[in-house]
Image 1 (tube, rainbow, N blue to C red):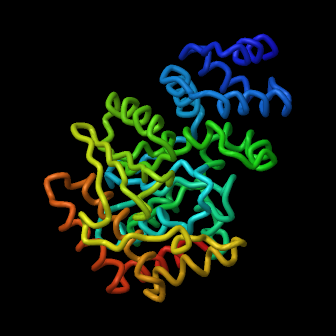
Image 2: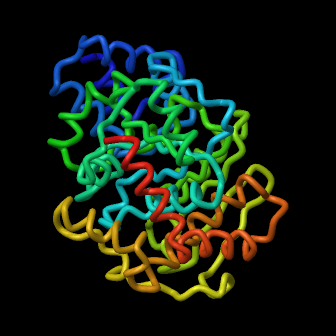
Image 3: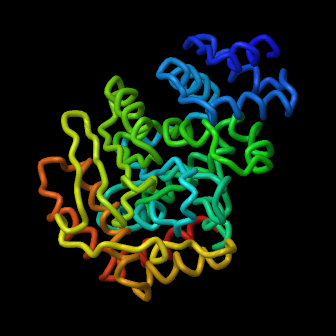
Length: 331
């Protein structure tokens, strides 16, 4: 590892096979915690290459605990995190909206490394018991339309670096990898990224996969559709910049999307959104992300139609009912 680190410090890049081997060695415990932290830090100082990202991803997928839910043709809605915005759990809320609208969802998530509450934090606050039992996961998606996969249970690499990531408290290349390594390999994905170079990197990576996808980025730095500014959406055959006004949605302020200062507060905000007790800005933001997820599944539909479908699922209480059913199956 010492020689690898010296090369990286001199701004050299890893090859695809080399990156894959490094991740495998990391999981095997061949590096010290200090070496792992140094490796992670390198990619804060320079961009990750396509070859590096691909190699790391291949290693994680090779090492994963596979789960076959392919017959459901599910979607995942997930952001990289690491945008430093501390928003409430927008993509997780959107997952329950999409499931309530009738589209199977397999949400792959983890604890927040740079924010108060990641998807796993808000699940845990509600008493959800994480599982890698395929039968339980199949029952959950079969009976309420959504299954939740706590990432460390399905990938030893994510578990191996959890402590280092938490202690560093900054964005790492594992933020980039998390959305790419859902062990189910879902048929559809809506992926949020924190900058435009990563949007292009994800777009390139997914062009070679069989997944139907969209990558989104709000131009003021959010890893989701925040409605605080223009946002870009990249799909396999098109890219487009939208404004909130183009969707007849309100433009939000950063304070509208704040996730609170504790996991408990974040969970209360999450609940208020699903109960319809939230501000319009919060509801609009969730509905926008859910709408583009539906659009990934049905690209032939106009986005306004997808948005109306998402709002019906949220405003009618169907998303709340889906969440409550999910809790009854997963505690």
